[in-house]
Length: 157
Image (cartoon, rainbow, N blue to C red; front, side):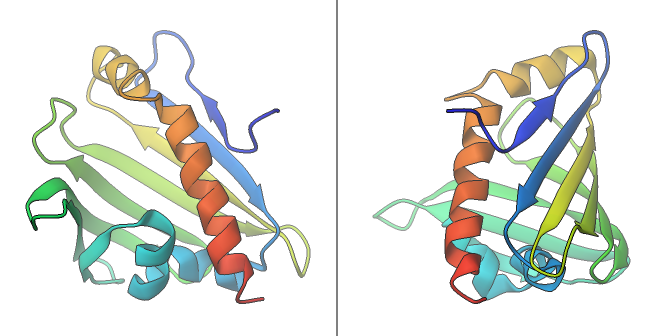
């Protein structure tokens, strides 16, 4: 089955282009990324902080059954335009990837469908390539997360 989340990584470039169309109105897609309770449901992680404003910070984390943090990511929001775009940094702690710059753009396709475009810039081509190939693969992980977003947030329609 063809993946709905498309990840384009051009050889020799430090960037990733990620796109996904959703059967969700623009308002709900944007809320999936900006309302802590929604984000926690589809990502399966805890939102520690989410300041949806320019120069606001954010942090998410996942704990194991004993309460130990096994994943933590954080960053700063540089630009926040409701239902249009979020420009932010993204850093996964305890990984070699360093800080990435993400441009998230939200687009209405119809009254009931929308599209997410993510343009990610990494520090180097090598780090970008390493990030793509970790674990089950970045594309597969994004597909799983976006499918969960569609499932969870789709129930709110």
